Length: 610
Image (tube, rainbow, N blue to C red; front, side, top):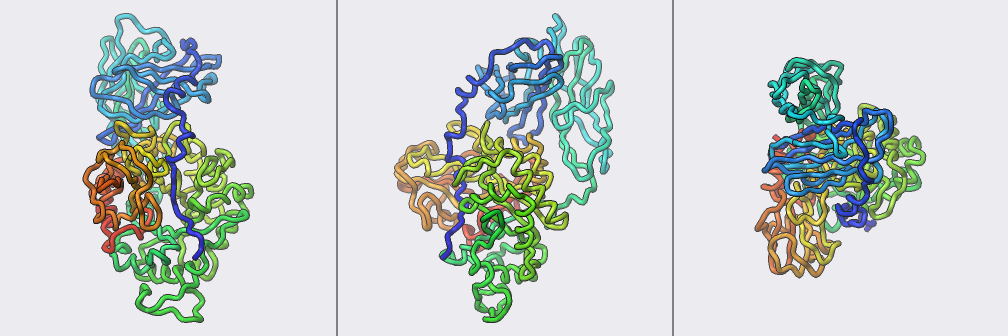
């Protein structure tokens, strides 16, 4: 049997890569005078149970700003949680954010932003930048800043324009005008309460907010944000409005006895839109075959075959590729991508991107090999992780992921899908920060954000924690290790929401030697698993250790001395609602063989995305 190229992410296992909050606070330089700088707040998104806030510091003077510190107050019931690109502390309802070591210097005319996840509906007040007014000058005695305008509404949306309207703000001395913010940046200042933004791109997502300016030129808090998608652009993804993608592993045909036909008998094939076939290898700067026998040589009998027809000894293509060809004939809506890399086989990417054109050519030649070119609709690249550490450490630089994406898109063209599976490490200075995922998104059709494996029994003594938390919670072992943090950070870096798929694991991670039912307990090691300690398929856990609680949007179970966390149909339904509210492109799962024989997890994803 060939070596298994599994997807043990351990994205959160390398805690040494994450700077503790107390240490980050110490990185900021002493505050300098800020008479020629401003700080502007924008609520970039709001999903009902929480929101993403962003502060932007702009140097409006003629000399460089050497450091920055922003202070503000939130009303009772509103709170800021995990932050990125700044060190955030709080005392009661008062918050202080300081620059990190690498983003304190702001050149004249330049800006720097940081973001955070929050809860509640209130707006910040009492803003100070380096001890002075966030408006860039002294406060006006006896003159309060204006209130937040109403949330803008969008109308007359076309391919290239949108008309915005909002209710007026109030001010004790009078409102002079309004700044219109698009994706956090000011695009216009108007005197009325309407504005038509033109010159937009068809089929593109935008976020708008408005803030008022009074007669003393003081700005108030920004309104709530409104998401707008322009029409046209041919932007509908293959398979419908939302993507439901699953990974099929070539090694699953061995011990797991999971074959392409199982996608039919379980009812899965009728409910998914895409399949990622995992994995091809990356060796010597090229895409290579992962498992020749499973991929295109294994002979299937009539009862094992998708169409009930047995393979013959002399037919030109057998194995999974031929079965996938038969699956597409039966379910023509399904698109199939060949995925390269994965946890075990990511070590070759660093060498490959040194000659990106040659790498792209090798991948194209393999995917489009005449023997199976009709099987595949594109390529998926699973690099774990660009310019960061996975099974091995990579030092290819932040730009390498974009270099690879651009080369792949240039070679595969507009008629093939080009996607990537990426880290979900949303911690400050973590793996998302290590590479230019925002720039690379221009060439990728979408990202499979691996929002699982945040916590597991590689921390043998615990604390026990859900491996796929949707949101943060009191006692979480590492801030930033949640789906919400990852998605918010990728959006903040410029990745359109529709290009992000939420990851769902069809398995659980667990510890043994646990006496505490609630998360946060101590353990003695990894719980026993069928194929590997500390991990088990959902189809086994649903009966052997049924869920008896939920935390942060995912389920957990304590049975005997074992403690497991995993997603159930119910938690998947909630996650899909969240994904839709976020405007995400859909969801994906790792991987099909962990589901039940009737495909109940795939069904939950499909129903949740409707």
